[in-house]
Image 1 (spheres, rainbow, N blue to C red):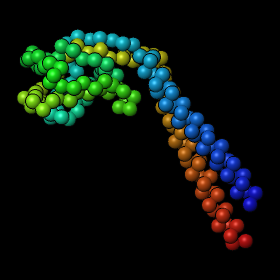
Image 2 (image 1 turned 135 degrees about the vertical axis):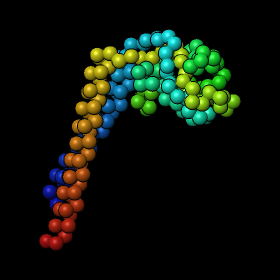
Image 3 (image 1 turned 180 degrees about the vertical axis):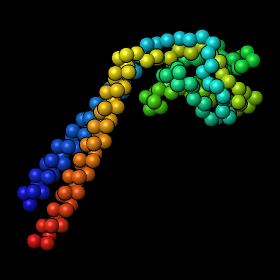
Image 4 (image 1 turned 90 degrees about the vertical axis):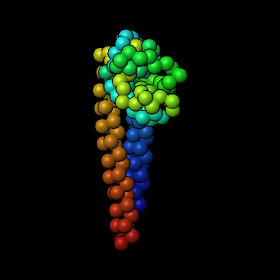
Length: 165
């Protein structure tokens, strides 16, 4: 029975460490966004091909963490007003990708490109370093999950062994 008690303590310690790692990933992900530089670029293709109305069309990954779009036109220069679409900024939950949703009355725009002035949070050396750290922490968290499963397996196996003695 002492073996199970020791394994349980180990499992609790490993689970606590894994929880701290996951909290660290969440904190650093939020911090990574603040390390980016706000950049505005005028008259660029932010969406090469608009999707159907009421479906999201992702903004090009060239413009990560999109914050706003203005002065939008299609490939022929016809203006699209803010009444014609809804803009959603890039957020951590969507890996920084912003998107646009055409409203019901704009079926004629489906398949067009969307050229706008965009403000986005550009990569910096510091944000790239934070992303690398997040990747490393994610790999470590995955490894911790494997260890937890191994410890749980050892506990279950030892329970069956004890029952046979």
